[in-house]
Length: 229
Image (tube, rainbow, N blue to C red; front, side):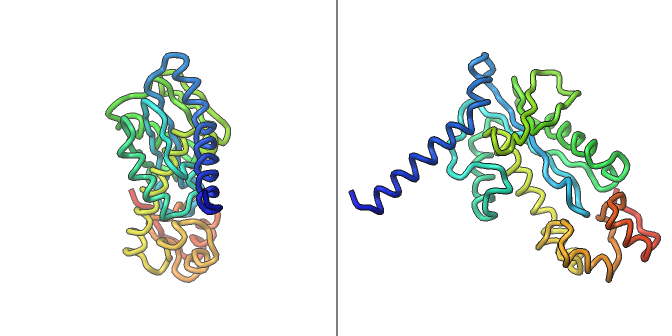
């Protein structure tokens, strides 16, 4: 065996071990008799613009997909590939959103919960057991386990974070076509310097979250802004 082949074999073995560790919560749930295990996560709490998006992914077995991880740790190109692989392999998956108006009315935490509730409601097959990223969803009647940093520790939560991230990024790319002055396709609504400069120059659009203090600052210079419904 050549050195290159040995390195590839060792890398593949290390990745398999990592993925097995990533499935430990799902394995424990199935050991208790729960066949369909769901993971749920949201993306987009921090941005100044755009909806918050949640996804739920339900599986009946392990997702041994190369590179599966917290969406923030996966390169964009691989993230898009993984989202398709997850959707093809999952027993069920669904997306839920909460709008900018709902974020402003409820606050970002409760809007995130609303998005997760909508993702659960949209599933074609309900999970028997739900893993979350440190959030307890009170409206969910089944057993659930909130796991701190669940998107980095639970395979199904990581999968949900990837599906949600890819969906939300696509929404912000489309928003960028409609409002090119803000650079949404580049920063996805986060408070980068380019985004802050654009807010200072143009004021907010209807897709900015007026409850966020940096948008409030821009509102002082550009009154009359109303969020999208």
